[in-house]
Image 1 (cartoon, rainbow, N blue to C red):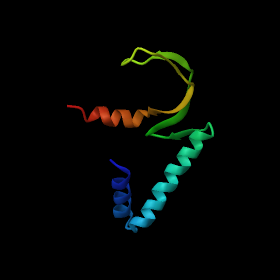
Image 2: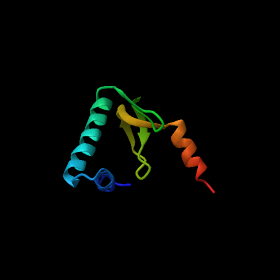
Image 3: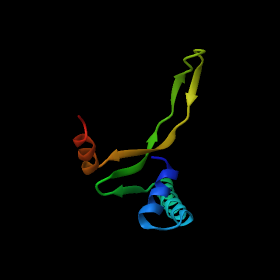
Image 4: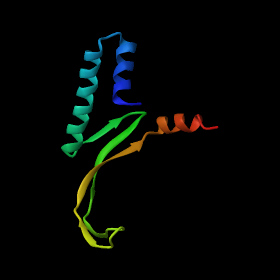
Length: 94
């Protein structure tokens, strides 16, 4: 599902204008990004949790040229699926 599809679905299910649904989805995503950026954690019961994880820098190698490169430390978002969502997905497997 894309962001546009989510907006259309919200507008349809709640009988609101697309522009209103767009504002709602935008606000939710912006709030989530701000929480992760400020070293916060997002937990949505039954769905999963998001947190930012620190990865240390290291020395790597360009596979194409073989040149040694330094990879800088970084902080990336991580998602851990919740139990309810996991069971729902597993229940739909053939």
